[in-house]
Image 1 (tube, rainbow, N blue to C red):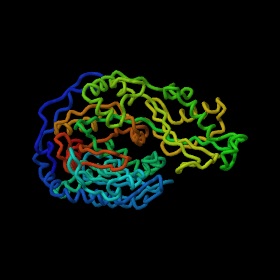
Image 2 (image 1 turned 180 degrees about the vertical axis):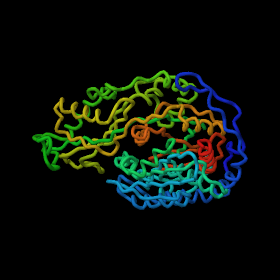
Image 3 (image 1 turned 45 degrees about the horizontal axis):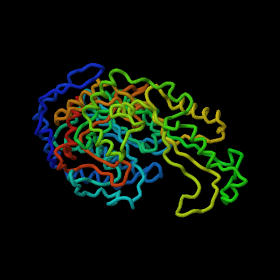
Image 4 (image 1 turned 60 degrees about the vertical axis):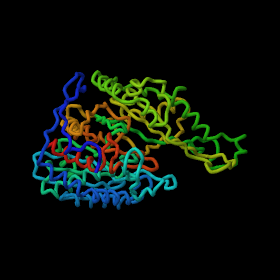
Length: 506
């Protein structure tokens, strides 16, 4: 049980004022309290331990696309979990990479809702964890309550397990889901979803099912540490690539690793790469690729209004502390930092790979060096355009020999209107829990939402769910199970919010 407000204990009676479409408008009215749903809420409470055990089972299956580890097993378990939750049909969809999963639940309802799941997870170094990353151990955390620690606890198996638990509770209460469901799941989100389009667009039965949907959402822990919720109306696009400098392609320097003393008479591919990288940014760290900002769309009036509200209602100090920083880039104000987050494209070095990286020295001159890059794109930018500009920029400066390798992510910007049925229903459900959700034009991160929001599907898409988690992609990732923090909701309320959302959409 959580000690925070629950769906059954509270029905919002006040209507907040937020900004959408450029004008101050009344938030959608709260849902009416429904005694009809009381048996479902009772089943959620009764099945709490079952829900936790199901999540632990899922976490015990490591499926790491970057290491090609446990992918088939991860797909099979996702299929099984869908069937157990009441989907009548579920199948594995092969791709050029890790398989996808497609499932349908026909409840005889008038409307159909899409669900997006991912079953792959980030890599782990077990030595960095305080408890085993593949166990899902329950531990007590001061200031929060009981948490579950494990890889994918919050990104994304924890929230997904809550949605499945909602379906179990609905069925156990003798009810049918109020909407039909179409589930699409992938196993390569953490490497940029390179093959998910084959599932969504190129598999006829999947595409037909999604075309009948009113939209699609990804279950997520949406609360920040202070209990607030921000609805993200889209996401940035993403490119992941590698720049590789080698003696072979350069035609200078060694074509195999040699003794470092030979640097007196051999050119060095490693420095060649560093010099190339230096041309990609300004001294202040801003992207300097020729034409990089050519198609960047200015922030709209409506987006400015949303950001003004965020700047007033969110805490700068705690946000800086959460990322271990003291100031924002370019010494920006809090309001400007929020705007930069949603509107500025970025160029990041994820890592430099090559040569000797062990303890001490090795007096080696590497013949090959790689830089892993990440570029986040904003509206009107496309991956194809930026990749072409990157190649032209390097060639113009004498670095045309450096190999550019596409590496996973190639996602476009996604965007969903604040007036879409999905977003309006989310705000109504959050109000049931006493939360006046804020709007963010787009997240600084990326997910394959553009596969749904762009043609040919052109569906609203986004994230939804109460609950709280931390340390995604990091050691000791966790989600909150039983809350003793008045601002935060645990697993049962996360499940309740999923139930309420399905009924609100109906």
